Image 1: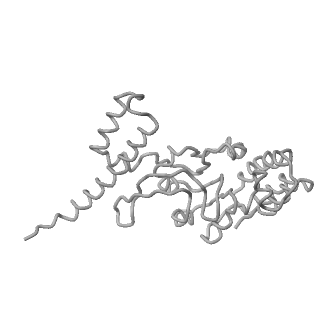
Image 2: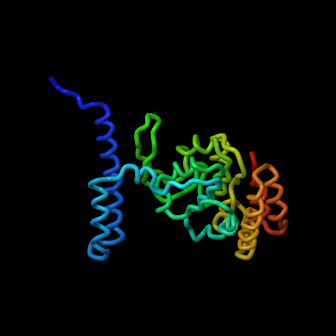
Image 3: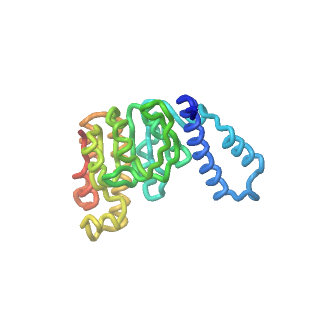
Length: 253
């Protein structure tokens, strides 16, 4: 007669194997950046101990933050011009991939989610994220993603959102999200050419970027439809074709 392992033991074994797998990937990743002979031995020893005897509670809560407003702006020199828009805002700010472990739990623990950077209708682009989350059945599940994608949409439906990336409307509207968002937004000269806004120069691009951030900063102070009018009042130059194009693609729903 085959004696089945109790279900609770099976769940713990599955969870343990999952977390060990995540930790091993993290440990291997550490060696890719810092070969064994170039970083302190005690650091690797400590991380290996964590892999062999993982602290489940610590992993479940790793990097999870709570608050009212959350800003997610992946670190990228080409979108640095957006930083002034949230400087001084009383918010949790996430920019680096190391902060994005368990990102879904952090999103759940905030009321207003401000997301900005490069993206597409599929979502906000990000580095690869490894983490764990609580599944519907109460078990820990692994997830990895390259963006704030459709796997975040159910969480974001209950939030007030700001989505600032190229074609964010293709993500916001189909997923029935609500807040301030953009359509296609030109932030580089190559994007201007792609959108058929030709003959632009670097001066026009710099003016657009600077005024975009300043206008967004004021718009973020108002969590409602009037935020669009506030933005458009500040972000306005009929002689700048980039600004004319972007200004027509600012929305609230």
